[in-house]
Length: 283
Image 1 (cartoon, rainbow, N blue to C red):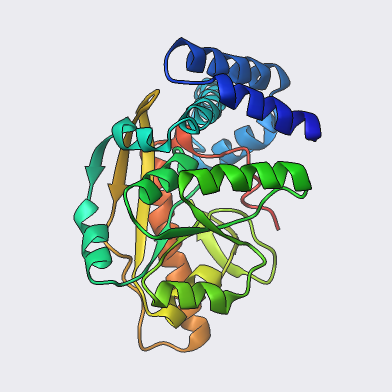
Image 2 (spheres, rainbow, N blue to C red; image 1 turned 135 degrees about the vertical axis):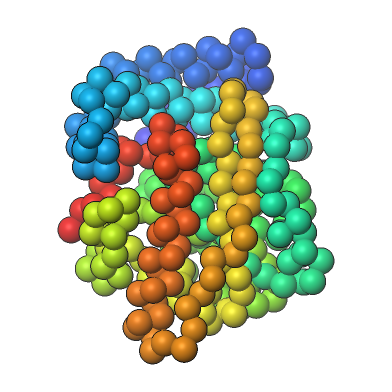
């Protein structure tokens, strides 16, 4: 794993927008298309969610996912040279007043997004725009690679809580006016909430809904889509209405489902920019 960290640092030192970034994207894209990691998983997921789609469309979408991931890497590594560049790369922002009003009032928020669009670039944009963002992350088990990724996020101005953090720390952070970033679109185990996601049953982490309840802050869906390399659009949606007047378990169930719906909307707008390679419906 040491070799991977060294290679990424080398590429980051050379990468920048223009022909170099195109070369980086082409390098990773060609590797993904040859290795085709989790291609069968992605195709199975797409067939399940889009049962009427042709096999040609499914295969083409998987290829676009590989291309999307390649540009994610190229953009992020280029951004390390000067994180403030992200303010120019995000050309369109819808709903910015929602976050501005919360920040001006000193009120915290749960920011939810998915592994859709360039989520790492989105975190950098939020931080560089002056929003007090700390994201909940799960770093790789390899210590050197984990330290490198943590250093990258620190350079972007993004704070982090490890996924095994104590929930009360995150709740306290949001109560004090912090923006807590969560990506609750990945598979969870049987301890989670059994819900539908894109029309099919799976388990979803109940932590985001629990934290929103305990912190008493709004849950704001935010997503960033790539319009073209180094050109992005951020959409900030109104807060997800949280169910009230229910028992604890019923509220967790209902609010988790509402958060799922918000993330489904993000995915269905641009399916080729979601991480279909993930085993989301694993039991």
